[in-house]
Image 1 (cartoon, rainbow over the protein chains, first blue to last red):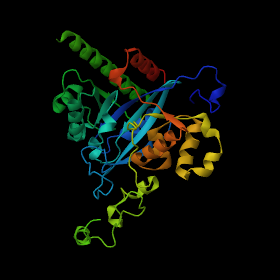
Image 2: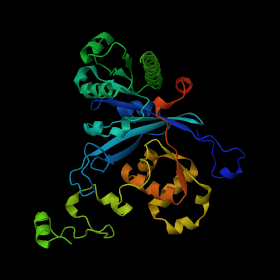
Image 3: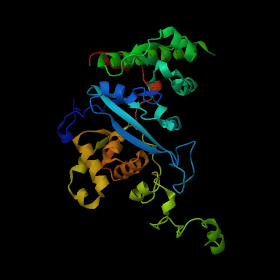
Image 4: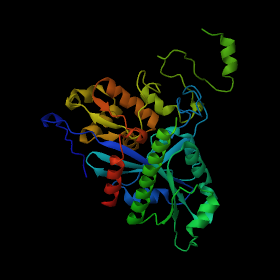
Length: 207
Length: 148
């Protein structure tokens, strides 16, 4: 669906509302299906965007200028969901085995929430992502991608193995299936909502 | 100017390396600088715009009515024109523009900054979720996802 703004904007009596954009991150280990998940719900085929971490201002890897000779390129695959003319959700997933996306700090800034996609055969692969979102206080859910033939661990075992806080939702999903991915995303937003509510409560309760 | 001897030591490893010190020198990087530098040749070495906040990946870029003037196609670089063309079709996020032009986000930020300076585009600042006035937006996101 297109935005409701034509290039002849001057013809509109009332200037159209500028869309609100939000983002959800999709993290997890190599080959767990992050780009597949993005592609299952995106209205565009997942696009790739890259950033060089030796770019000045990138924070941790700052070398102070473009003369920096060591560089890490971080790639993200992303998709777009136009929920309404004035409300657009972007999904960002880390493709490949890139371990350095954690350094791309701004990606996490302003994220509504995150999905940690897990494969029960390689649960350890998502430790880093779980750690990262916990430390940053970004609301996240763990979605166990149920590969064909993979043993279906009960959710409770996954929760224990990842040592998750009781409040972190864990659900099973199929990253190829649009309905399943929709459920995962709804779960993230609901969790973000209850997290925000809890924060507001503790703010008003505090001194 | 610095002592030429010291400069020699500094660049002992590189052949024919950068000589320039001023920002106006176009060829101040050397081959060994790696792939991080070359994209920035397009921005004439600039990596950011003074006095401009960092453009978020999901910030939307809108073409201004002034962008409809065909004169810009003659005066702007192909990359600037490409961005302007995309945004005239519909507003684009910074991430989408970077993907479409196949350029690093940092480079695209500078190019968008140029266009904003010329008042050919304006860029929105996304609202961080913590600054949303209430839950209604998040409810709308949930409803929208369910309705997909």
